[in-house]
Length: 204
Length: 149
Image (cartoon, rainbow over all chains, first blue to last red):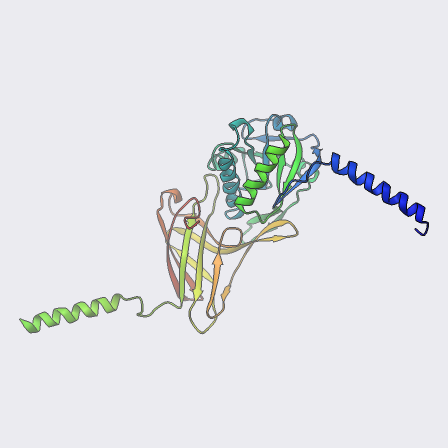
């Protein structure tokens, strides 16, 4: 840009753009573990079974916030650890939010061959209020997870046993059943509660 | 009478010395251990603890046995490209003068085939082996959440 006039015009345009940009853009949320999706992302039509309803579809996510975690009941370490953390966080938010504003916690099984609705029911109930589970046979599970950017894979162990590798992300779905934020591990409880607090206050 | 008394006293001293932990001390010490019982519907419980190798030689945990469970294995949860993986660790090495942690989201024990209702157990006893050599006896409380947090 050799022309001084062009440089001057560009500088003015930049300043004006910056001015209006700052006026319009909301201040970015200060978050530790979460990435907020702006705009919120629609979830492709899906149909699972949940421990609450035989048909669990997009409409079932409407009306309240939901934290979605992917796992399986035969995972003794990270799945209970994460569900406990989510349940503790929900409990911690009780001080600041009415019950209907608290996020539900949904475990979607990536091992539908072994995770029956009954198994998911007793497993999720153990972690307290607002925790429930869902499953779907293939190929519905693959379709649902692919849409959300979640991957999973069966890995053989000894004695014909197997384990599941799976994405560790925790998704936050808003009351309008759209994807609003993604939390990526490692997640510390206090950071997670602070992030959730900020997001629920700002986006509700 | 005096002789009998001193005999009794020395026997007591012997008894106390015999019980002291210094005698035949294990090269591995364990702290902050606990067992998370399998939630209903799940099949395996998890065990966590910190262990220190006080000896001058490297050790490894190659097997774990417990009267309360049919099978106990060392496993590790790890993150790979945003995905959680869990893998068996057939030989868990501990270098001399080193402490390693088995903690949620990382190394842990997996306890299968409980002999009874795990939720009714208050404590679980385990023995760590390096080959056929027992290197540590553990007696861990059962708790739904980390009791040291």
